[in-house]
Length: 192
Ligand code: B4P
Image (cartoon, rainbow, N blue to C red; front, top):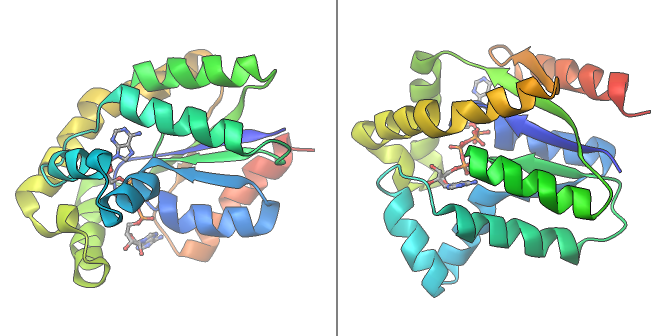
């Protein structure tokens, strides 16, 4: 089993590239953002709590997302690997993920870290807001908050996996096809 984390700031293209990577490799896609938006769409109690935090640009509590990932891992035995998209977003989530995978005799193969400057991130999310209907993309103050939270709480995840020598930085500006090619080259160099 080969597991990878697609890592990067909000709007760096994790969701966009994940779609293509799962189509090519057959990984099971686990996006905590998508899982949370499904809870919101179904108006579950968890979804209601998550929506109020997401609309403010804040993270949902660790125990909620760790619980979701733990259930998803158990529900998908026998897959060729998992692609984690938007998770882990805190060091506590990373440590929990490492433990969950080790209980299954597995681990993270590589962390692909998309590098995109802040002004490009903001412009992408503002554009996405026009079509996605995502309320967390519409307000510039919320976008700035999401970038601040990323730098404070999520960037340390790259340090955690950097210490394990698992992080590969990939230029995230360019055409979607070019970035996809760079990501697949890194995966193919490790997953054989
Ligand atoms: P997510 O759903 O993870 O979304 P994201 O980080 O905003 O976007 P992503 O990087 O996937 O960008 P995309 O491909 O869409 O998180 C949303 C919220 O959920 C968080 O703020 C948080 O509140 C909560 N949450 C999620 N996971 C959590 C966790 N683990 N713990 C706690 N809370 C959690 O790309 C963005 C735009 O750019 C798109 O419009 C796309 O078309 C465009 N684009 C992509 N690639 C491009 C390129 N190469 N050039 C130009 N544009 C490009």
